[in-house]
Length: 134
Image (cartoon, rainbow, N blue to C red; front, side):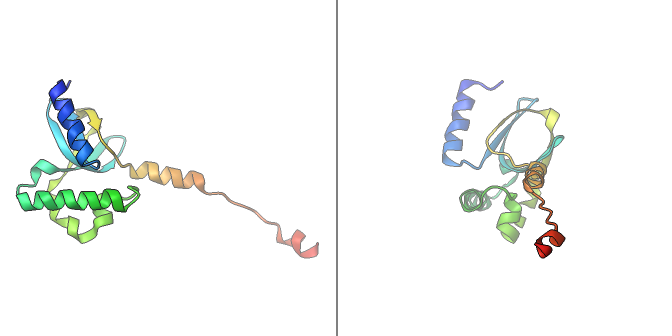
């Protein structure tokens, strides 16, 4: 469980950077970054702490902000930003869902996006023979 100070820090950071997600692991460790994809068993996550260079950290936040406000968040950040985000490939980490106790912030599930699109499709069958003779 998180103490009230940590929860307050998470809320303040999320107010400034809405695109950031905080993962609370079962070990008690808190990770901050951007979720690339969440599946039923795994969470692919760009871990902010793995970016060592301060200039790269600033760029990560700028590109995350561009993705958040410029897209509809239906695409992963790396797909939306493109080659500029390749710089952060070393920060991409996978966490098993059972090792995550809590998630605070947005998440993206490509599987859910796919299922929503499939459900929206509608098929109309028109009998052309009847319309041609009428």
